[in-house]
Length: 283
Ligand code: HBI
Ligand code: FE
Image (tube, rainbow, N blue to C red; front, side, top):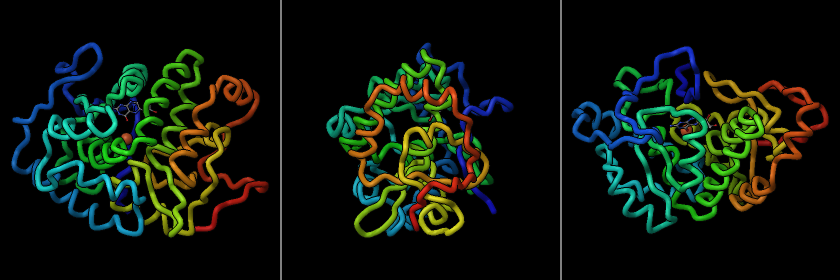
């Protein structure tokens, strides 16, 4: 089954992007003239396929914010989106050549700057992308930055990331990012929906995450998330569910230092582990 998970930080590969273009903070100009007609058409086809899948599967806030991306038939100029995004929540898109190290990444988020990769996958990679490309970052991550509560959470996440780095807890914090910002689910009045960017930009996982009986779905518990390993090359086997973005903000607002200390004495949990005492949310 062709899946298109986004692989974070896998060090066994040469990154795709041209990092010589980037400055000390890893940002660079959007190389708009480098896009070919094929690149724009790839974006158009990815957008059309994904937008058709959203009803009944993507959360309401995402569907409401998606038009803020602007053009759907070609790769947008980031500055055009920024004109709207700054007014909406004070966030702005900055361009990066691809995955960047954690401290520069967290630093950008802490300053309400979201790093968006500017290259796009080749047509032969239509269903499977190893690293985040402009479609994953723009379509998956940027719409919810127009939502005030989610936008505030993302900045707090960046600040928390810098603190975690100081405490040597980056792995725990990247699991939180993975199971919320990348692969999070939200329980709406009218049913379960996806809000994670890795799901929303994936043609296969969007249906799987919301409707398949295979994966387990647990209420968001910070300690459980931070103990749970994740797989980067297949659909998730565990999803964590929130009831609102306010819940995500409130649960991740406290200082995690005591959590990191408690975790020291606890073993990791496999991505597919089903612990007897846990109440799974029925899909
Ligand atoms: N870099 N450009 C970019 N985009 C990401 O989403 C990203 C990253 N570097 C690290 C990273 N995400 C994850 O490891 C976070 O958990 C930090
Ligand atoms: Fe992502």
